[in-house]
Amino acid sequence: MARMFEYFVVCGLGPEMRTVDGNKGYHGMRVFYLSSLLDQYPPDNHSLYPPAPPQLPTCVLPAGVELYPSGFDANDSSTFPRSYPIVLTEGDGSKIYVSCVAFRDPVSEDIAEAYRIPANSFADKCICLVSRSPSFGVLRNALEELFKLCFSPAGSSKPLWDVISHMISNVPLPTPGKDRILFSIENCLLSVEAPPKDGLPHVDISFQPLVQCLDADNLLKLFTAVLLERRVLLRSNKYSLLTVASEAICHLIYPFRWQWSRLY
Image (cartoon, rainbow, N blue to C red):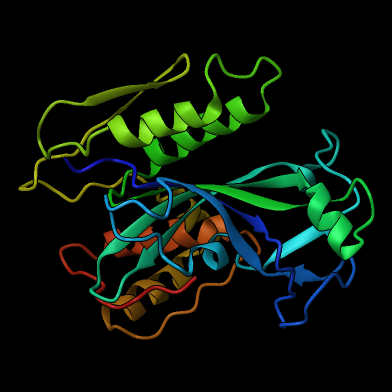
């Protein structure tokens, strides 16, 4: 049975600490470090799906892992958790859809001690849901519910990994044109469905960010460049906009299809 979710993945600062420039060890707070795969479900010795993409830790934290002297601060928006999607293209052209929530998490005591990192330091960490379904909304909602369970004062009625493993193992991939699939995370009821294959393509993203970020002239230039299969570079100071904008423009050119890889 094909499943809606393939992996739950945790990425962040690993035990082999190295800067994005390749320098080993700790080099201060204002330096970016390579992201590592810290944990996943199903574990890496399973045979249900192909292994998680090896580039996943780099793609979900593309700037690298930054260290901070403090964690979440309700009065500082730069410390708030960030939710965003990414799309990975495999060698055969198939797509992998990933929903991410990045946040500041305390540096583990073992890593802090091994590299003499100042006490009570925080580092970027990212939790992800990996799927073959372009259901961005469902992926985001499910992951944000899991994030709430992680940090809710009330916690979860079950061990968190039991909640995650149950969701990964028991939510089937919806059949196009059939009934909705209902599933719950703690007390939150979620649903997912797939439209009939003979209808218009399924669009589970908003076009609003694209038209808000680009004026009419630049939007037409982008549309033309994509139709002509030119190389296109999208630049944003908000990583969350890149996937949304690129997915939106790819849907706008329907019935044509962008056949090349997308790099973020």
